[in-house]
Length: 99
Ligand code: SF4
Image 1 (cartoon, rainbow, N blue to C red):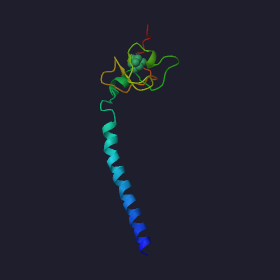
Image 2: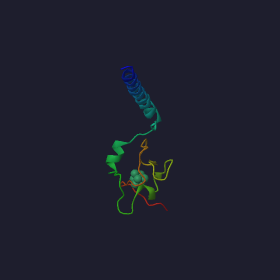
Image 3: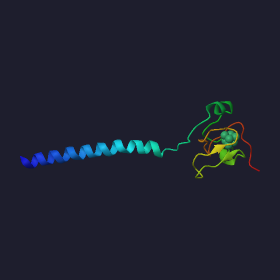
Image 4: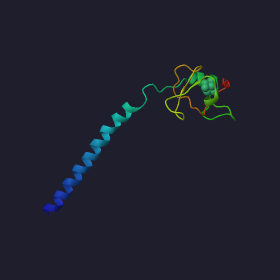
């Protein structure tokens, strides 16, 4: 009987520990998200921005694109102020071929 009580106590302790870890992780996940992530919805709409290329035209091959920290990660665009979520695979009507 005592052994069962010990096992129950251990299970409760482990469950509470897991819950505590999970609740502690949520704020860390929020803090680790890029603080500057933002989109410029008005400009995206005006320029018909899409997250996929149009044939061979993509943000990665556009003169206006400013790459982000990684080649496949989001960057910025010189004609979309404040937008930090421009996909290298995106496209809009302001596309201008890199020289
Ligand atoms: S102008 Fe358009 S196609 Fe060029 S980088 Fe900006 S969003 Fe992409």
